[in-house]
Amino acid sequence: DNSNSDNDSNVKGHDDEICAVRRPEKIQRPSAFSQSSSRTKSKQSYRRKEDDNGLDNSEVEENQPTTSHLLTTYKSNASIERTGPRDMGATATCEIETEHDKDAQAQFERTQAIAKEMKGKSDDKVYRGMSAYGQFYEKKDSLLGNASSGLNRKGPIRAPTNVRMSTRWDYQPDICKDYKETGFCGFGDSCKFLHDRSDYKHGWEIEREYNEGRYGKADEDPHQFEISDEEDELPFKCLICRNAFIDPIITKFDS
Image 1 (tube, rainbow, N blue to C red):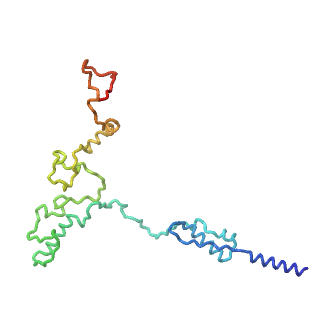
Image 2: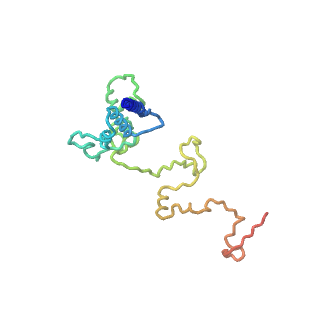
Image 3: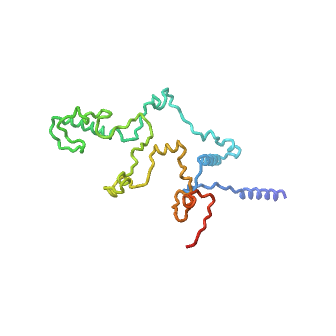
């Protein structure tokens, strides 16, 4: 009997060992239609690493990474000087127009430099562009010769880089003046301005209406776009007594 009971216990223990099923974790393959945070990935990899080492769940929970491992840290370069410009951006420039090495002033200065270099030498038969044609006399006292001046030079004036402003002047409405006033333009469809004969208000007119409180009042009128018919409307005054209408009665007749 004792031997039988020992055999039964061995069989049961053997059966328990056989019935113990370990479910491996599913391998998450990357997909274009699924997303996951870096915290989840690091946590899963940490658990998988602890399971491979044979630790218990309690030990894994104690050794789980905290939020401090997920924070981003930066290391200082231990420099005394502050980052950024020394003047804290007081002399920063803003070049939103043509670059200073490509505008008309820079082109003319390069032309002058080439003319000084080639002065007294024979032509080397090298084409340097239309603006670099050879000049046989030096322009000194003319407007074109003073390229470094702020006002006297060829081409558009170079915009200041120390002034930051956003301004749109109303002197150029981009509407064809000939077509608006006469209905005819000699350029035809090749005209770069807008062919429109409707009335446009200038910026100072819109600002004046806004200050006076009249801006947008006409849009509140529901009858502003109605085309009136003189036959269906009342006269300005009564044709008999010449007085204004008080409570008129309108009778419509079918024609």
